Image (cartoon, one colour):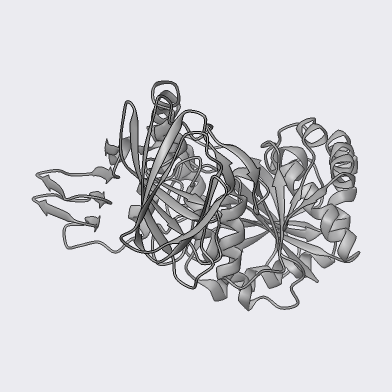
Length: 468
């Protein structure tokens, strides 16, 4: 049986300012009504005899993962929470151990949560070819048929054929310069390294014993101590953190004699930059991609995204503009690989701009910061049906709540009451309080905070249905 493993722990910093640490690109609707993670889940629908879907991500994103799995009606999946990032080798090893615990003959299909694939039937055919190779004890990776010279990807060199659609991997090649990349594409023997894999869990673990024994030893210790937390499985911190941070390629695929590849020509894109999003998007007659309230005059070959206001561009060429309600990126499209460098600099100067957007998702719903200055903050809060804030109090601030839509149950200082639209209440500093929504429609309210400190860490929780 085939057990999908989806790696969902990336940050996607090159798609800043839309992608932030708390809401990275895989969970954002970048190119349609569903996120890249949801699209990855949808692609699994055409594969036969699937076992449990396992998603590996970090604790901060656990409710995002769970909600998007619920929207895809995949509640039976497992969510394994990594306490720290240790690259792909430890994550996949733990997933392989979990798959083997359920199915001794498990084959695992390792996918990234943030890839775009437009030709799903071609993807399904490649997976079928990889399953055949995995049955012959090969460890299979998928080589993307290159559409252009690309210096941002590693490459695979195709070796001798081992099946009608599969080949040995003769060489793994690091990211090349442009001249070398052009030669690779012209040769027809090199493919982009997709970072997707398919292999027998048992054979993968045997090869890890040979080539990365310390990693598998630590992963076994971590797997034995996994603990349930609500609907999640927490990988223990100490054991997992002791693993070397290493990719599957470095830890195993470049060393094993069983590495094979299946070519994949399926409209693949890792959407790793604004340039790649421009590449796959529909363009106007001047080669522009625009979204939101955008007006362009005399502008060519550019990407302009407006999230919260009108953005106008005049006389520009080969430029990327991305506007959100708290940041604006303006860059030459030739320099977009440096967005990651920009984000690293912002972490020191304005860390909130790299961590969270003004719209912040919570397991009970979301909130958007509308205004903030010394001594006050205004938020628009949405509590989904069945959602409830934790029972909490604040040491540094009081709050005023005004309901603008729906009805919510309020607990404040030992009193219970219901607030409807156009009604308000006052939460004194130090009062234990909670808002719950037992109804069938979302509750929306405006919260005005007043105090000498308004940070999110000024929350003392007494009870929380989400285990925070």
